Image (cartoon, rainbow, N blue to C red; front, side, top):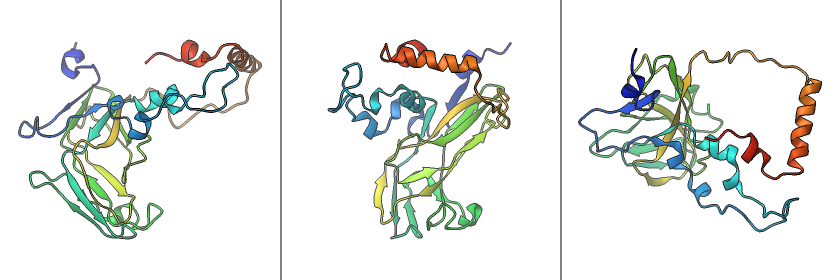
Length: 243
């Protein structure tokens, strides 16, 4: 039997790069380590009307579903510093790569239906060059999504799904540029995408059972509501599975 713990470190996923750039480019990190600044800077409570239990109102920083979502997976970083300049409507985008490593180039806009395909006028889509190989355990794929709730990003990468157990090779990330009249640097280490390993064929995502609620389910919801009216944080402490 293959010892996946020995091979993959955490049984499921590992990242590796060419020895020539090992230690020079930023490493992937757990997504929890790259939370957006607006979220990190929030206070847990704010001044306002107290809830039915007399507690101070909580900010999004106390929202566990939000935290759980932003903590899932691993962030893949920009491998080097780049400088980007755009015109008034992003129809012209100029990227200066670092002298030692190409980390950004372009796709042809026709590949995504033309310059207006993203709902506004754009130049050619960016292509961020990723130098990290993502390798997953047999039967596992890598689901790439834009970094969750990073609203300060001047770009948005497109999502994708790659069977990285069978394709242990670098995956690059196409992106739409969002900000006109931009003239600034984007530092190495900026999170580009979040990669979440998923088990293939663990469910059928083309079919779902859509039906009306049963009487038993109605009673279950009513019970939860009744408990929430008596005990605060019922979901947090009694229903949520600790991550």
